[in-house]
Amino acid sequence: MKTSIFACVILIFHYAAGEGDGPEYACDDDTDMYGEDGLPTHRPLIIAHRGSSGMFPEHSALAYRMAAEQGADVIECDLALTKDLHFVCMHEPWLNRTTDVADHPEFGHLLTTYEINDDDEEFDWNDKGNITSWFTFDMTLAELKTLKLKQPEVFRDPRYDWQESIPTLEELVEITREYAEKQNRVIGIYPEMKHAFAINKIFEFKSKGEPFTRFEDVALDTLQRLGFTSEKDPCFLQSFEFCSLEYVRNKTDLKLVLLLEGPSPSSRRVRLPSRPRTRSLACFGKKPTQLPHLKSKHVRQSSPPRPASGIKWAEVETANTARTNVTQQRPYPMPKPSAQLTPNAVGSRSDPARDPAIA
Image (cartoon, rainbow, N blue to C red; front, side, top):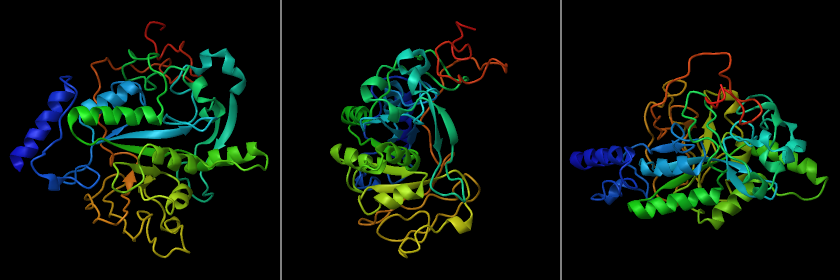
């Protein structure tokens, strides 16, 4: 067993160096080491957060493909809804941070301000306040496909800026299945329902009293169409917002995950008093599951065991170190501190901090 696991590690690093399409199904001599969803149970999952976002622009097809080549078990993506109810993959639904939207005068009239907060007025789970930008849900998928992506972090390699368009959830799934077939293994997805409460409020306001489609319903319908309906499927549906998980928990058998920025006050840990089977933040499923003990703000003391068959179980994950990012930074000089080195506030290609040729 030790030899087999060691060989798997070597294989991952071999392909991370850029040789081939990635590792084949690791440790295939012992099928007991994998769950019904095809993902490893003998070690923590390798989750590619926003793809290989240290090397390429986050949430780009380049980043997703590299994550698969590097051996990620699961690729994380944030779901951003379009005006015509498609999902694109972006960290936030506002566009200036990662695209060249400000260079498109045809979208100038869409610059606006929305309040992006969750439903809990007493505690900040993932509040963003008032955001002024262009938003995915004010544009169609065809319009969003005219934009190009950039690396939003000034300390990361900008050489791949303005090459990639915004990928859809369908395109991410195609990539995972393409590489899963090449590598003879399972690659899962880890979609996050992002700011669903705020977007639902905006859709409700714009509907002027007419029926509107909730963010969560579009997510479940899209995932079902893509073949993700059961806890046996390699998909974890996650959110920072209680209300989204409360809404979907009886509508799907997918594995559900509540994200935590850090410790929450005990007074906010009970959100479902009318449903006594839900006794902790971790349980949005068939049976109650106690919170794993957290050693410190962002570190789990131990990884909880995977559930027995038939139990829909949700693992508590913090926003930082509980995720294992499959990212490697290409050799690129770290910029020296400078007043110019600030993130582009308006999403334009002409930011000297993002383009050394302009500086």
